[in-house]
Length: 332
Ligand code: UT7
Image 1 (tube, protein in one colour):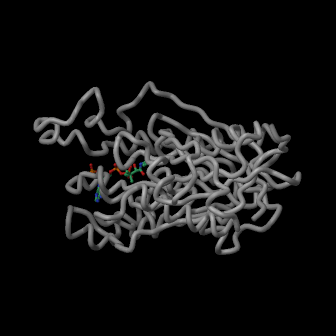
Image 2 (cartoon, helix red, strand yellow):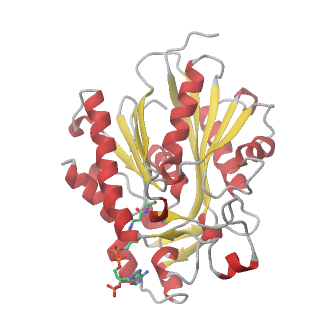
């Protein structure tokens, strides 16, 4: 076993499907308007995957970009985690499909199911697996094809979500100072119906009836989810700051899950941090669930919003309910 200090992000990548669906396009499909969607969510457009673009293929393309950015060879990867709620299929895991699409060695690969918080959970798992010294470089991916589980006649949900993938290469730490410093994760399964897809699993296998009842579509009680999202994201930020004796001013960039601009603004108000410190790209992507944070991290990095030595705080919330945060000292 090697003696490691920790792990750090050595490369990021993302993938956007080429098809863009604007709010005006949606207004031709359901009873909504560009103005309603912008005012209530901040979303202007989202990407929609084509038939040949799967959760695995989008994850593979994002990963290839992250491997290139990290300056390593694909044979250096020895762990693959995919956070997703829209896997290509129940099994094999999407991570195994990514492994073969990228032509990796026979490395440990599995999926993580924590909905929109999935990337934070996967980062925590991968970091801890790597700290024992058995893994040197890991791919941690968030990839989603949410368009495949949306009811395109339900204006309360279909306007909110989009498709895409983001990935990071997590590498063993050789030098102290830059790292994935800490993660906080939590769950509360007592209210599963706030945000769920009732059909398709073993409790409600697909039948003509279940299809007719629309049980294979994402369902959400939007207002209730909104309130708990703000509360648990605030808790996640405070927990991490308190653990490390930090104050909001110490954080250079917050990268929140991109569900709704009003949620992000409410979070900024509640922790008394300027909203300019919150990275926002949901206007162009919508909510891409587990992919939202790694896509945002890749954009922030490529747009030079992140400098070496910056404190970065990732914070997410999702179905389950699940929530959490990750504190990074940026180096890449
Ligand atoms: O990533 C996982 C976490 N997910 C989230 O964080 C989502 C959290 N929830 C939200 O972001 C917001 O609750 C929504 C954006 C989903 C909804 O915004 P809201 O301000 O909570 O609206 P609402 O549900 O209270 O609906 C207000 C009105 C209703 O009409 P009435 O009953 O007041 O006449 C809705 O029927 O807006 C109506 N409405 C729409 N109108 C036009 C709902 N959806 C639409 C729509 N276009 N797309």
